[in-house]
Every structure is written in C-alpha cells, then in structure tokens.
Image (cartoon, rainbow, N blue to C red; front, top):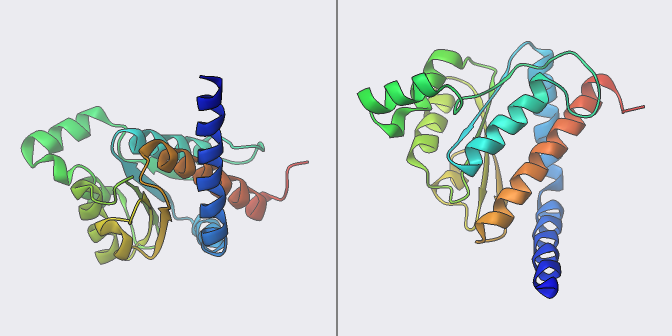
Length: 192
C-alpha cells in the first residue's frame, strides 16, 4: 500500500507539472484579467457541479475573505451555493438552467465567469457560458481530458491533461489557488 500512495502522489504531480508548463502564459493572462476586473469594480462568478461546485465555492471564498494576505474583500460569488435558488430553478425550469438563470440576474458586462467541469460537457455550465458571452462577460473554463464541448466556447480554456477525475480536480484547485495568490500580489503586493 505504501507504494500505491507514492505512485498516486507522483502521478498527480506529473499531471500538475505538465499542466503548468502548457498553461503558464494563459494563467498569467487570466490573473491580469481578474485583477483588472476587480480594479474596475466588477466581480468574478464561478460555478460547477459536485466536486467542481466545491472548487467554485472554495475559490470564491478565497477572494471574498482572504488567501495569504489580509486585504480588502474582493467581489466573487459561487452560483452553486444557494439551495433555495438551485432547487426552485431546477423544479420550475430544469437543472440545465440553474446557473444560466442566476447569471442572467447577477452577471453584468465586465464580470469574469469561471465555469468548472471535469468532463467539459456539463449542460448547465455550457448554458451559463452562453449567457455570459451574450452579455459581455469574459469566460474562463477549467476542464480536463480532451476538454469536452466547453473547450472551444470560452475566452480562456484550461484543460488538465488527464482523464482521471481526481487528478483533474486536484489541478483545478491548485490553479484556483495560484490565480488567487497572483491576483492578490498584483493588486496588493507580495506577502511580507
């Protein structure tokens, strides 16, 4: 079992390193985009299902509360957190509209939208990305494998080079942490 533990960690590290080498320039572009978005008084809106919902909530919390430095709160929201809204939309209109209807109500031109899906094929995430594009929001996608349907519809797409869901999710939250840290540093300076 000890060998299995080491092997799993090593494979996860290989996936992250390959992802970083392929996406470092794009990550920097998204950091600048999000920092500019906050400077201009706009917000970041995140969403996903299951583990991706948890990642969306986690990243939103890092912006609103703090990441590594004490600084003013930054406006971010995860659309997968309000159970009354989620269940009413799902019941009245369908689960595929739980994010798009919220985005229509809460999103504005100039906001950044981050859709997270390990497969890249979540219909409710795709519908929300379509609403974002139609309403002048910048779109960012975190996905994996071959990227799915979402790979070609966002302004910025991050595809984790793995078909193994745990490694995709591990890379997504690492990506979220890196974005949070570098946005903080761009807006407020490095941690002392």
